[in-house]
Image 1 (spheres, rainbow, N blue to C red):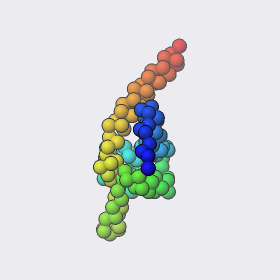
Image 2: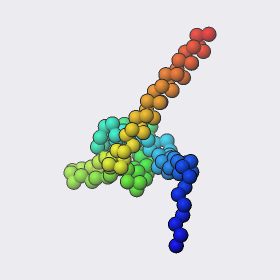
Image 3: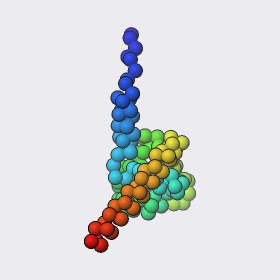
Image 4: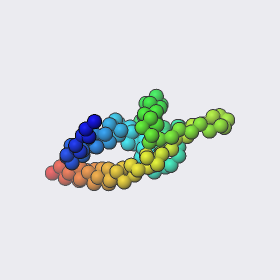
Length: 123
């Protein structure tokens, strides 16, 4: 059996970006991950409050997908009533630098756009 030659750097990078995008795609996943990253372990209803605007069914679906991707763990706490807690795995925590950079860029972008809108309304 012959070994395949290594992929060119550009192709490897594009595949890696596609893989990351596939994991983080959608309206809610990065927000859910961010909430768990910055708030820590959260119960389902607390997570609902943190991720403003998400429906319970959608949150449940997104959490299941994040759990399948080994980014989130789900723990059923034996209490009355039974509660479920969600927490980032070590693999999920590895997204911290990426999310911080996205947040930093988003803050700069918001400032730039708001400044432009303010200038346009003053003219």
